[in-house]
Length: 176
Image 1 (cartoon, rainbow, N blue to C red):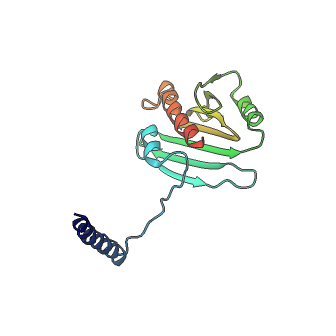
Image 2: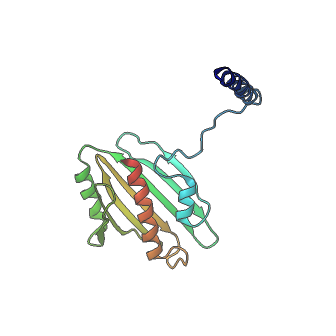
Image 3: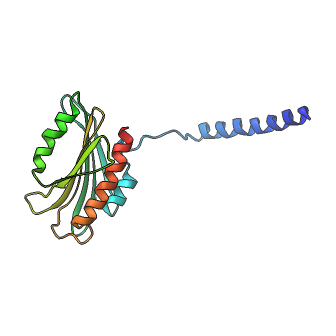
């Protein structure tokens, strides 16, 4: 019985070696994705923005956070998801400073990171947006979902709030 098992693994091992050889022969090599965002991928961002999104990633530099930006350009509006993450020694104080931009229009987001809040992020050009500011240990993150259309039928204020909460869950979870 022991000899049968040895005979079965011999051909299986030979097939595996042959398959590996064919892969190397035909030049199958690993590829890097264009977007290296560690906190969310293009497929998830596309779902949050309501269509195919193209992403870009900028590494953190001296005094600058890492930034992931996803853009979905439609006929009527452009939808954008932007995530920044920075590691900082006094993350709580940095979050408090960032929260000042929200003014009194902010609400706590329970169960997101160590602390998080959401507020409106409308731009002066008439676009609609929502922002989450949060902290996970010594990392501060911001997430913004925006539309260039003030009365966007696809990304209404309530829809943005629901989608940005989903994005915040994923980003904060990946930061832990």
